[in-house]
Length: 116
Image (cartoon, rainbow, N blue to C red; front, side, top):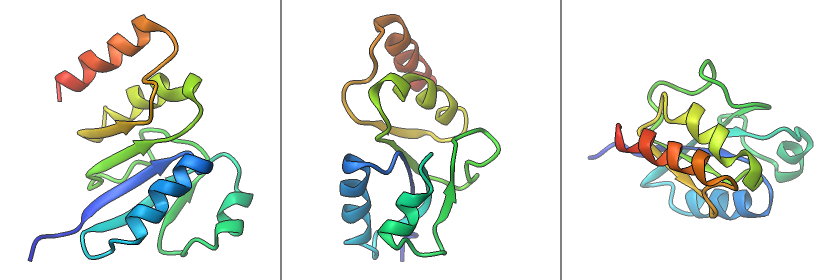
């Protein structure tokens, strides 16, 4: 049997909750490993399992080595900086639209992703 796809979510607002629900509704294929959210109260409000790691900020030190996918649902102005950090450790990064606000920064993320 194939292992589950290990997923992380950055940002746990309205869109992040939709991703959370989708992952949790298909636990046979997916495993939510980590959530990154600056508002810790959202964890308590959502009653998230203690098996899921919860960090206030995304950085190279707290991204699990075996993470398969990272989904970025944080506010748009953070997309490019979060993606740049994520692409250093995770080969598949999904970013909610839009990719970014500044074209040059968005293009940089596209080029980094192509190198994966």
